[in-house]
Image (tube, rainbow, N blue to C red; front, side):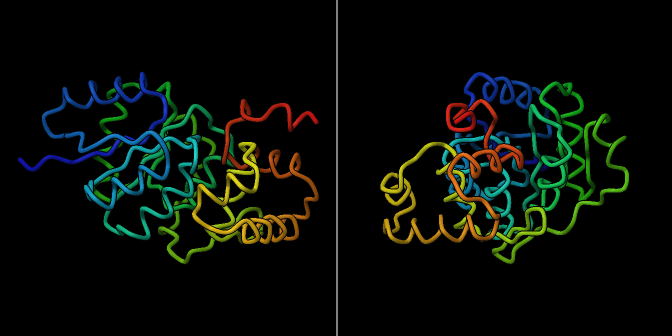
Length: 227
């Protein structure tokens, strides 16, 4: 029997270990690797070429939504299943638009997680029951591989999404430039473009936007949001 290989992308070690132990009990499922942030998830997906990536949304350095888009662009046959503590409409909609085939809440039973992995591997979609009831009308689109993400009618490039997350996490321009391997002036230009596109004029506004769209968790940078 050929096993379904799964890459776990989750920044909390205890959650990741629990998922691994759970999947190891299933004869037809195999954990191919583990990632603790979005960038590592992309790198490992390209290296391991798993059948399914079980992806958290809120991860450091690069969130699961943008990581999903980049994984699917590089590996069209790989399926992504989102696992999140949040089920806000914006989170589910953005995950779907990024190309994810399913969305599960972290309170989901082990049985449903395994079932979801098997279903999306077949090409089907799978949502937690509470989400399905609200989103019967929402049919996940094909993976977006255009290099552009649409957020509330605004198109952001992958690089702009990366810069936005690092800004929202409180990184200075110099830190952002170092993390992304680009010049400080380039970061400043991306920041300027982000504010123009989103109609936002300060860092606090960019942070609130990042929280509202699920790019970062609302526990991050509360001092900026409140400022």
